[in-house]
Image (cartoon, rainbow, N blue to C red; front, top):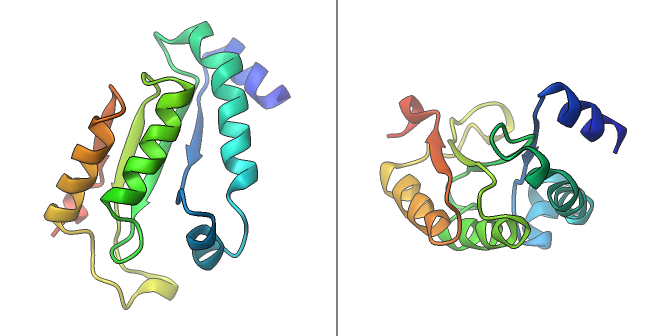
Length: 135
């Protein structure tokens, strides 16, 4: 909470990497529950976001991992973010196969477009990042 207060007061930003909505999928991909992350995101969003909406202190992003993070998953994450505040910026990041997930393909344009449309149904400020990685 102290880091959030410092960020809010100094003009800084806290970016949450909301990897998944589904708890079992998060456990499979990350080895831990996503419940604490979602709880902290909600807490910080409710406490701080409206204090400084012109320069948001809270943002979120999700990596579009093919075969795991689809438009339904993004829709659920976006709905959750919107419950906190529909103006919170949300970035969808293209995946590039590396390290332990080198056997997966990069994010396709089709996947990125579907996920973008799913997020836009709930949120006002959605963008796709790492566009150069999209195939």
